[in-house]
Length: 140
Image (cartoon, rainbow, N blue to C red; front, side, top):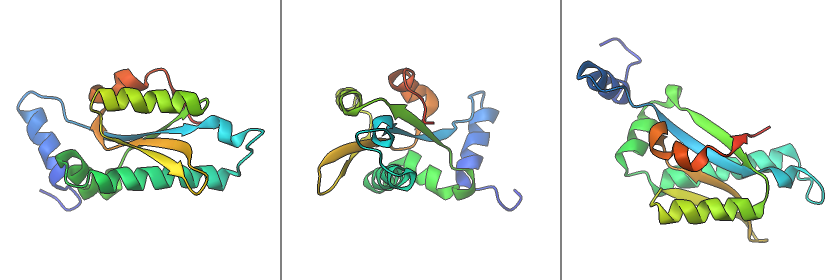
């Protein structure tokens, strides 16, 4: 195998060779859109930092999961999708749904204010979690 092709890609190729589709792992983030608007009006950098915190925390919390390990072995091939939740209530409802469905995630709380800002899932194959995220649009 040529350089630059790691174990996660090899696993995907094995799956494809055996008739299964390659598993593409994606880390989904759902970020509160209302934080960018009045009355909050957080700067873009502060909002982006919330997504970074949530993503890092989710990866750390689930570092021993095989999907997370495979995702981290392929640093050059990481895929993230950042979606927007309109407000805190919607974000909290999503967190409850994910908890009920045993979907590994981290609800990031900005401190010291204790404000829920972002949900990050651990890396998942898209088809395993898309049903819970389909109502959310890409963050703009």
